[in-house]
Image (cartoon, rainbow, N blue to C red):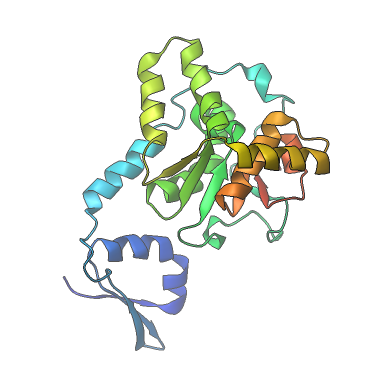
Length: 247
């Protein structure tokens, strides 16, 4: 396979894609002023990633978007608000650049990204097209560029939708998707998370028990950011938070 050659700026913009191609066995040379400077190559001793398998994994995860339309009680997504404009992805709330819409490429390769139940339900229910705002994150998680972090509370919130409709097939699809260790890290609640949640509630009285557990899980797991659609979490200053659907 011949080398692929790119300039520095093109490589910077397309880094997630180029990493995937290098992992699949391609050698990518980065040049500056037409002079080769560096190369992206597969790790020695590591079998190349099957690009077809990786693409199927991404498609499998992205296929969940909108799969749960009508499963969850819309009253639980209050306060009601109009759908945000399509160009918006997520808006920075704390400790992240505030110039325009948040760029997911600011998150480094291998970052853990926590998504709470409100964000996951927004993606799965795709109410008013809200799931599109999470597509870049979900695509990156599906490609293995980032690791999604989900609390047991969030998974419970996800599963209550299809179970309320006695849809066992969809329930199993969700369980299998979030049990995939290449995409997701499922964090069960334990004593450390419970204690951290209590401390967070004392610091931020607006947090209820579930919000405190979600935030504690994100912090304890080492997630660089928590993606949420919950107004109380969007106001916290205790951890970097992205409010997924707010403008």
